[in-house]
Image 1 (cartoon, rainbow, N blue to C red):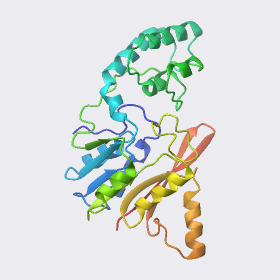
Image 2 (cartoon, rainbow, N blue to C red):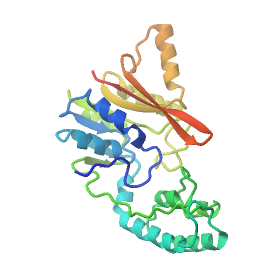
Image 3 (cartoon, one colour):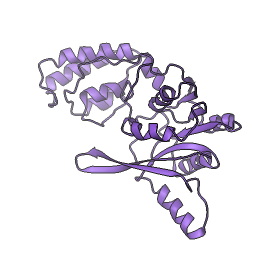
Length: 274
């Protein structure tokens, strides 16, 4: 099985910078367990589990319709190839002049059916800026960041059981009766730009707090960031009221992430085996 150290197509919030720590955390859990990736994202964590534990059952909830993007990869490659030709005379990482921008927009307008605008964003927008439709691109400054390589996904989710856009609570209820189940829980972060997530309108504070119920008396690997005050709140409750939270006795790993040259935040992974 080919090893992927990042998702085959761009994805906002993918966990490639946490893979080393994630693999280390997996050593705390059984190699033959059922791993349920409740908010599958790009599938990178599911892929990594299956690669690390070939005998494990891995359930990937395609919560953001990532597999649809994978199925349209060749179409995306052809479109980016055309954009590369349009920008062939332009310097890399430099603002694209208006006449070339007009040609790019014209080519995008010609595309019929499904267009993977997230992948297009990575190629012609400032890094970490992802858009969802053509009208948004018309308002933006474009840059020549077009990749020289074709996107590939051979064997990416091989051996992984895929469910599509399933309610995470349904999956939790389906598997919670098992003795040997581990939940991978990576919900959209609070206080983070989630415009590219297909379920972006779903997440309110109450929804985010409800996810913590999944972590109660279960084995889990959970991701959050310090942009949320959830951990601070639960630590305060645990200290002042002598009340166990889902994170009592868990292992916490923190990584500093630079989102822009002038801003950064902490990505956090917490895991616990019961």
